[in-house]
Image (cartoon, rainbow, N blue to C red; front, side, top):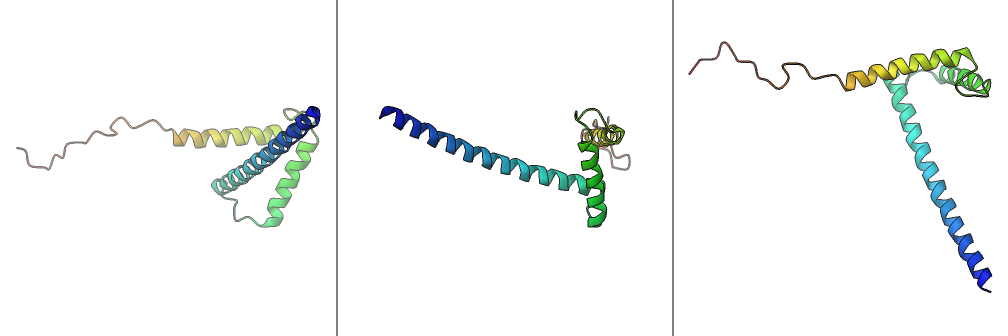
Length: 115
C-alpha cells in the first residue's frame, strides 16, 4: 500500500514539475518574441511587408536546415553571423561608450562676473 502512495506522490510531483516547466517555456518564448521584435525595430525592418519578412525567415530556416552542426555548413550562416555580431558589438559599444574627459566637470563661464 505504501508503494502506491509513494507512486501517487511521485506522479503528482512529476505533474507539478511538468507544469512548472511548461510555464517557464512559455515565459522564455514570450521573452524571445519581445527580443526579436526589439531587434527588428533597431534594424529598421519592423515596417517591412510580411512577404519580405517571410521570405527572409524562410531563407534563414533553409540555411539552418542544411547544417547538421549549427556552427558549420551553409556559408550564408557564417556571413550572417559575422554581420550580426558586428552589428550587436556596435550596439554594445554605443551603450557603453566611455565618458568624455570633461563629463561632469563644469567649464567656467568666461563671461560671468568674477567675485
